[in-house]
Amino acid sequence: MKLVHCFGSTFGVVLGMLQSYVVLSLPHQAAKLQQLTGLHQLTGLSSLPLQITDQENADLRSLRRTKRSTEGHIGCMHMESMPGELQYVSDGNPAVCGLYLIGQPDQIVEVTFENLNVNCQTGGAVAFFDGWELSQELFPSEIDHPVPFPERYQMFCSEQGIPKKVFVSSQNVAMLHYKVPEVGEGFKITVDFKHNPQPCNAVGMFEEGVLTMKNYGQRRNCTVSIIFPEQINLVNVDVGVTSDNSVVEAEVGITDQCMNFAGGDYIQILNGNGLDTTIMRTRGILCGMDSNEDKAKFVLGCPHSVVRMVSSGEFHNTVTFMYTPPHETALTTC
Image (tube, rainbow, N blue to C red; front, side, top):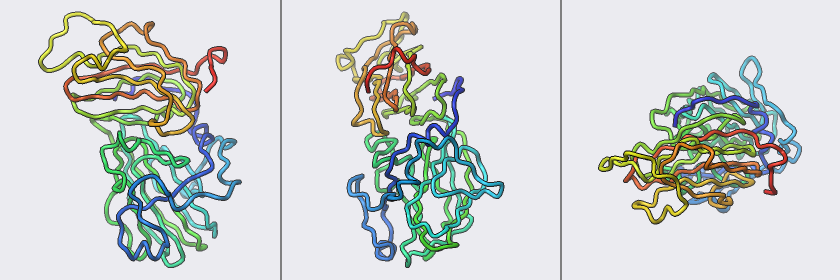
């Protein structure tokens, strides 16, 4: 995926669309950690053990932007797109908090712990998650992520010492969940964003832009999620056509009869109220080859707009699309 151009509103609008639940899930960790935190190991998204109950802090719709202090201090809910040091010191708030990290679509997120003072004995814990969790919905979804669900969570506290590894995401978003009920406890991390040579999944951080998705000839599903209502224009489509063994001399046009093609590769346009693409409404399925942007336009009125590319690995798929805020008169009921 190549970022061609993007501009628009700030991350605060994204934060403003977060819902009332932020949940801390548990990966494969030592039995001692599970016992000390009083939580249970998860093997899927169901039965998430912790959620935010402080409705005042959970209501983020009116929040335009979260800012760290000059020393890098953050609060219970924070979104960050710049590299540097971040520090959280608990004021005794017993709630589960969330740090949402987002880079450019062609970047990955790296998190290094510089200090960790979170006591398991008092119910404290910190978890790194490869992706985003929002209202008990995940991005990327379990079926589209290259890493098994339990391995996407890595949870720890002070009894294990400061984690020595660098935590790396598979896409341009990652997050920390943290529950630090003891006053003065907390953690310090360094956040960095590195180039991803073959990006697949991404969250669009602006309300307008142009993106190109590619499968690089691989068998994989790639999703771009934009957390705004959008008008999607497919500028250039080559899906299910070009392969190592084929020479295409002319555009064949686009069709919605994609399962009739070898491999069954396709572009899927979806929208919905949350991050989970598996429960979103499909607005279109297309494949073929065409560079006429007037032939494929979609007005998506829900808060989350998605372009998803499903690839069998038999073709070199690419799609370039432009996204802009739809005119109010063109919006339909979500």
